[in-house]
Image 1: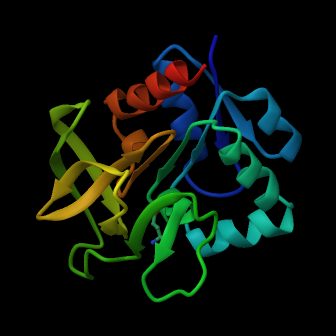
Image 2 (image 1 turned 90 degrees about the vertical axis):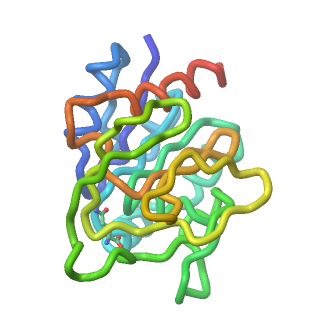
Amino acid sequence: MLKIGVLGLQGAVREHIHSIEACGAEGVVVKNVSQLEEVDGLIIPGGESTTMRRLIDKYDFMEPLKKFAQDGKPMFGTCAGLIILAKNLVGYSEPHLGVLDVTVERNSFGRQKDSFEAELMITGVGEDFVGVFIRAPHIVEVGEDVEILSKHNGRIVAARQGQFLGCSFHPELTDDHRMTQLFINMVKESK
Ligand SMILES: NC(=O)CC[C@H](N)C(=O)O
């Protein structure tokens, strides 16, 4: 059985585990660096990227996460997780992991729309995926190897570059597990 880890330092961890299990894979809450060796792919959940980064540093996850990426293992960042994966962040001089070749702007859907749902057309997933956006970031620009998978009101909200997948919304907060399945398929292909 495929083992999919969810970085368990902060954020919407349990919901991702539930979604992974609904797709027939094993979900592992990754709280220790050594657990990275057990998993075939890793989800970095939504939450608060600055807090998550602080905990990544505190528990010495930065180098092991970079190695996980260098080893070609698939990674999926959702919302704050997308911010953690991105190579460039608008208004910041340094990225966090900096592995997915996109530029991301935080909290970029404006105050009135702090949280909202929108039906999305997502390549490889479907035409009617309900995305839950919570103080969501969006992708401002993508590098040339990056495939844009979805846009909402002209803004890029999902993209893939080889082993890396990122989205602005929270795919784990509905009972529609197609986005999680897309990632699990990437993990299968990488084995
Ligand atoms: N739902 C989320 O993950 C919100 C992300 C958060 N606004 C951040 O900048 O980290």
